Amino acid sequence: MDNELVVSNEEIKNLIYTIRGKQVMLDSDVAMLYHYETKKINQTVKRNIERFPEKFCFQLTEEEFKSMWSQIVTASESIKKFRNKKFLPYAFTEQGIAMLSGLLKNEIAVRVSISIMDAFIEMRIFINNNGQIFDRLTKLE
Picture (tube, helix red, strand yellow):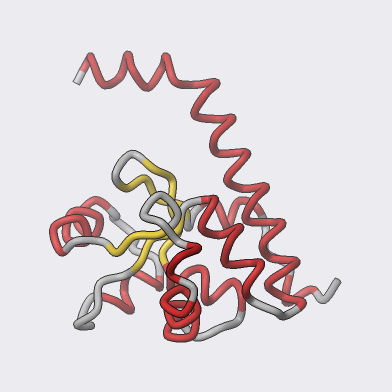
């Protein structure tokens, strides 16, 4: 495997956000990982819209985007890219990433998709294992 194509699960986990109670990745982060332009990712989704119900992919509202921006102390490059743009980012759930990987026909997309799925699974396990701690912290706040 080409070293420049390898992305660690930790790096991918840092690109996963919780929005609308779902773990998602922003379109620009997905594009960067797949070595595609964000525009091409979104065009693929629009051309295959029947494969992307809202539980797979949705566009952030302006309020969600502003809230997300304000909560992130060190914004990722993808968030910085959107700061002055007129288009709000799309968010992909784990299922949306899986659907997208089947539509993108390059070797990088196949390899990166496996890493992204692994990162989503690790995050889900972490949240499930630590859910009680998160509940206690929320109640204390």
